[in-house]
Length: 241
Image (cartoon, rainbow, N blue to C red; front, side):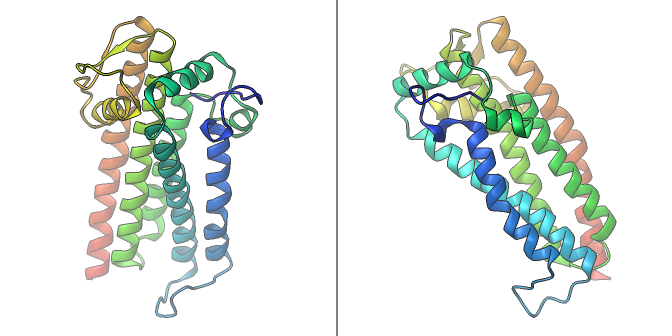
């Protein structure tokens, strides 16, 4: 999924590791605000655990938003032929230094990172959520878990795009050459219901990628989303009590 860039290869903005670094840097101030106890709204009366949880959860949400919006704008606005050349270059190269530093060297590792972030949010909500916070805490949990789910879909959309660019064919029932939106549709469908109706893998490597994606998404949907729904019910009940 992630690529190593040299000056004559691809623009830096296409490097997934670079976008991950920038998204991480962007999210840090939100965590720092919470840890320092700075309140943006004086009407909020929250105890320290809830404040810390809000900062951690909010920083995850900001990270996912920055990464997803940036990724979508870059890859969806690039012409299909140009994007195919960039994707092929990325597929053949080693992970970038940014990616290796963060430990997200593939679609699978990036998806696992997003899943663990969602799991951490769910566990933290179980520990501190029932004490106070109510609706705002519930909304924050929902937002963060939803963004983590979307990140898994985007990570594998990029994986499918790059596999297809080097001959590991994924066929779509359209006349035009597939662009990023087609691979994103496939990623969303596999994440949601394990369906491959958007695209059909025609090689062993592309089919293996779909199998891994399906397995990770099943675990995410079955464990994390189910846990989140249960926690939300607890949060709402605690707020109403």
